[in-house]
Image (cartoon, rainbow, N blue to C red; front, side, top):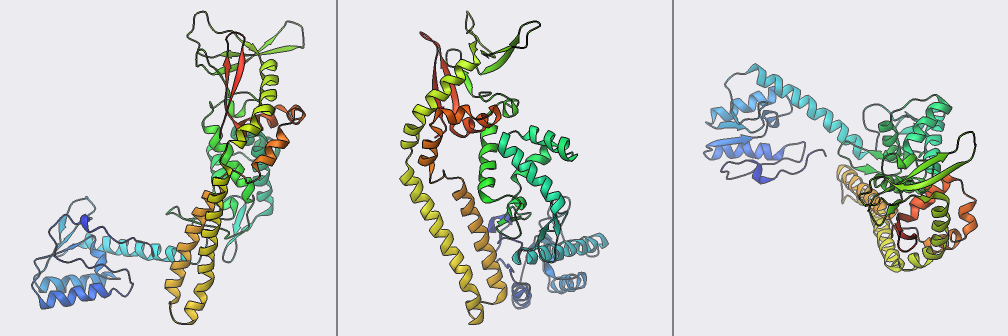
Amino acid sequence: MFESPLDPAIWGWEINRVYQDLDERRPQLQQLLQDCQHEPVAYLLLRRFEELGESVAQVSDRLAQLKALGVHIFTLEEENGTTGDCPDSDLEMFQSVQAQQRSRQIRRGHARKRLKALPPPGKTAYGYRRGKDRYVIDRAAAAIVKDFFEHFLLYGSLRGSVRYLEKKHGKQISVATGRRWLTHPVYRGDLVYRNQQILRDTHPAIIDREEAAQVDRLLRRNRSLPSRSASAPRSLAGLVVCAACQSSMTIARVTAPRRVQEYLYLRPTDCAAKPKCRAIPYAAVLNQTIEQICQELPSAIAAVNLPMMSQIQTGLTSTIAAKAEVIEQLPDLIANGVLDSETAALRTYQLRTEIAALESQRAQLPPPNLRQIAQTISIPQFWYDLSEAERRFYFREFLNRIEVRRSPDWSLKLIFIF
């Protein structure tokens, strides 16, 4: 339930036989004691002394039994990291055995909770509280978490969402905490355990699956942008690159004295050319970008192999359905005596973690209605009706970068993410 079968190569000694118990009744340990009584044994290798029993008394009794048979006992996982011979009398060893067995009991209890899909130990995630056998929503805190997610989905800025949370709700969190909120499975209705395995749909979710997939896309897209560009107020921030000098272009703001009007320019940040590449009016680049994206996006999406994507999605869906059907059959197998309850619980746990992994793969695929979306956003007025923050969000959904080509006159080349 909480340990994997061992690699035979871990021993590093010449061995004739390996005894390994995956059952709490320890049948292999009993077999080992019987074999030591019927045939000569030069030495016995253990990982830890606590593997000889469930209590200090059992370990002490079996150590004495093996020593009486002339068996030399060595351990591989001493506290100092060296291989050690079994001492004749060592109080510290038995105290260590007691501590290890206590740890083993705790890990066994946690493993049983995992098999029952119960919440892991530790502090409950903000927005939830512990119920009888699962997390339940704390309405006051969940409203704050939901608002945080909605702000991030609207503007795509992690730092901006953290500042918004403090300004509106007085809730102070660090940027690292905000990132954990955005990626943590608990807010999607899933449980994650220490072994990083995930069980889906174990409690009420604060964000739905479509929102979660959108959050993942935004975070993945922001990783490829300069840190300040992710929350910049202008929609082209972090996307424009000068094709001549290969420098990214930043947005410069110019104002005239005693005048309200301002002028925005895109200029290279690290141009090595001589003379240096000149700045370009921001509004002109923005208008040209909208015009070209309306012309080029439908053909770019048409070039995507959507039938192949559809086949992959269909294959994942059928695999998920097949595993879900196996889970539904397990109660009948228990009733017919084919499986015992512990084996069925372990199999259910394995299938649910496999389904969670497949669902994660399916969520990363492009939406099946991508061509219909392209028709909608290929209308220029759609882009002009958006705010700069909303336009920034949609640009980053479809564009990898925008290259400015300068000869003879400047022009744009749009590089799509697909």
